[in-house]
Length: 67
Image 1: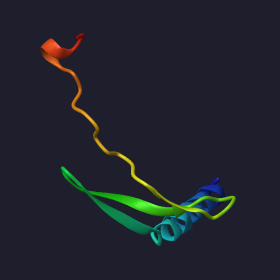
Image 2: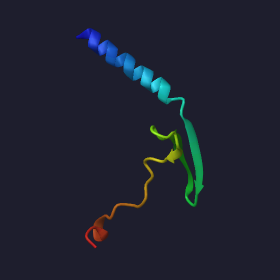
Image 3: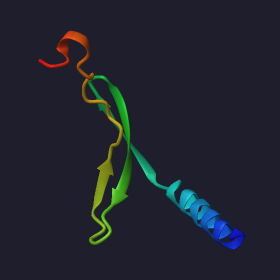
Image 4: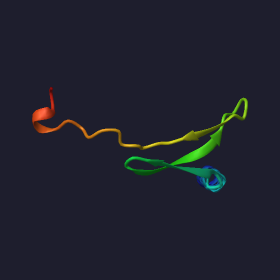
């Protein structure tokens, strides 16, 4: 059981280190700067930027909840 845990830990560490080498892409917007990752597609190696966790709007709360 400990061997399996050790193997999974080593895989996780290796993937984390390899993932840390990705380039970041910073884009200015009206509300400030947004940071994304510069990635490539697996099949054709086409470059693209991925932006995650961007808040698009505030959730409707209180009186605005069901309008």
